[in-house]
Structures are given as C-alpha cells and as structure tokens.
Length: 294
Image 1 (cartoon, rainbow, N blue to C red):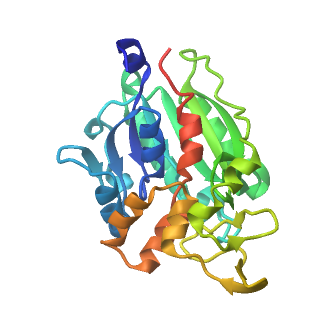
Image 2: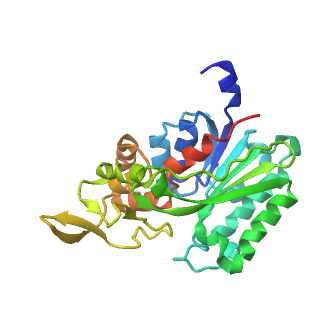
C-alpha cells in the first residue's frame, strides 16, 4: 500500500460491537479500528479473542456512561444499534423502547463532541422494519435528528444473499456524513449475482438447501431461533435439521478461524445469539470499500 492509499483509509470506532462484524468488514477494506463498546460480557469475550484485541485500545462497556472526552477522535463511528424494539419479532415500541432507544445515546455523545472532533462518517445498520415501524415516523425521526446535528444521510436495504453468503437477510444501511464536507455517493450498491451466494453453500454444509440454494436468515431478537426450518437432503428425501453454531457464523461471513476462537469461550446458546445479532461481514466490506477520505 502506497502513501496515497494509506491517506485514503479511515479510522473508526465500533459501537454496539457484538462479535465485530463491522470491525472485520471495515478492516478487510483497510480501515483502522481505534476502539469498541459492548455491554454483553459473552460477546465481549468472543470479540476480544476473535480480533486479537491489544492492551491500550479504547473500550467502554456501557454506552450510557460514555462521555465524549473519553473517546479517541475517529473518522467514522460504526453502529448497529439494538433492534429488539424495531424487529418484526419484537414488541414494536420502536425508538421509544429501552434497547432500540439507545440510538439516542450515540446522538448524545455526538452533541457532547466538539464539532471539529466529530466523526466525518456515521455507518449505521438495523433491520428493514425500521423503515416502516410507527408508520415510518421513527425512520423520519432518525433522519431529522441526524440533520439537526449536521449530518446528511443516504441509505439502502441490502440482502446478504447478494453478497456471497447463502442466506436471505435484508438489512437497512445508513451512511451519515457531515454536511458540506463530503460529496461521495455510497449508495446504491448493486447486488452481486445470486449465484455468487449459492456457490458458497458448501462452506455452510453440503446438505443445507432450499429451492433457491439460499438458507433462511436467523433472527436477531436474542432468540437464537430461525424464521423457517432448514431442509437437508438425505438419500433423496428431506428431513428437518437446525444449523450448527459454526454454520451460523459462516452465514454471517466469519472465517472458521474466528469461530473457533469464540467457541473456546462460549456455549452454543451464546454462539447462536452472537451470530444472530451480528451484521454480515460481506455486506459491511462492500460498503466500507466506498468509504475513503477525499
């Protein structure tokens, strides 16, 4: 990497980091993580092991206790804020819910941050239902809130199945950028051909399939359950089988070496939950490649 390429890379902080799907995708694109925040002790154990966290990296456990002056200055804040109150499987309180309302803790920290030290980019992920819950008023509230603190926004719904993993998982991705400073157009990102997702099916298991070759997504509301049963082939007949934790990590784009580090520290119950709550690494990578300094 030459000096010009290095200068185009950005630094980022990984909020609500889970097991680090944002981190891995961003780092694959060459970006540099300066710190992370995660309250779940089991996810934190996996994150530390999977990403080989070094001593001295900024870390916070509870975002409600984070103060702006504590955080390192970074070009981008990445966060998939909790979806429990937004998801179709949740209680649907929307941004008024205790978990999903933590979006406003990030806004609080931004307001506490001196303008010259605010991140140039906000990279946000949540479930597609954010567009329609409360008849769209919650999504409008997010856009208005970002606007009031000086961020323009662009967004797109992307399906993980179109980016090299064999699962349908539609998620809303939002890019906020400081008004007047950037003119880069991140979206739309065109899908890869579906066959690119299907050809990776053997990395999940030789026998998992549906009529398209794509596995239904796992839920993210801390249930560890699936939207549909997964079919497996057995001598020309079908039987019902549950995906293994390793297969769930693969569906989210994590290499097996990352899964093995997490498995040493956590039960299957926690591993299912961690995979279900993660973002898909492949999708993050495709977006992250378009984030660069002008």
